[in-house]
Length: 218
Image (tube, rainbow, N blue to C red; front, side, top):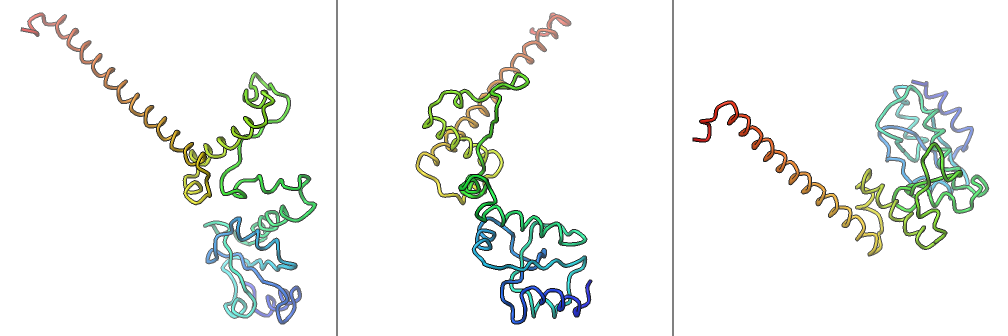
């Protein structure tokens, strides 16, 4: 822990006293840092991130200076410097001029409430692996639909919680339902196949017993 006099001196040298901007403490006790929070932070003219060391800070420092508490995840490093860099990187992506593509950040995971679609770079064929056929079709409308379906598919496969919270169109809602029916049909197909395999095994077992003991059937 850092003595309170040191924390007061260092932290207040940035936002001043009274505080001229929010002072954010990274802590397991804070709200989970998500897309909504760092989008709000990008709108602030100034922001102070308070890095503590292992075991935290004197409670008087927190009561006097900290205005916001956020958590990156449920783990505790020896210091918050690396976590602070994560926050800074996420926020900077939304600042003008940081990314080459003006709306590039809005295509990222979570920006639209789901996960990103698949990405491919040239060449179209690499080590025997080729682009999806739809990307070579030149049909921009079909390509856009495919990208949206891949976004929904990844969320359905990996993050069901995002699908439950995302704003979906009628076509979006129908796509996971189709996937669910396909999965159910595959499951039933496997069950039927296993039933057939069990029947074959039972038949072969009976045939072996009959060969070993011809009176088995009588």
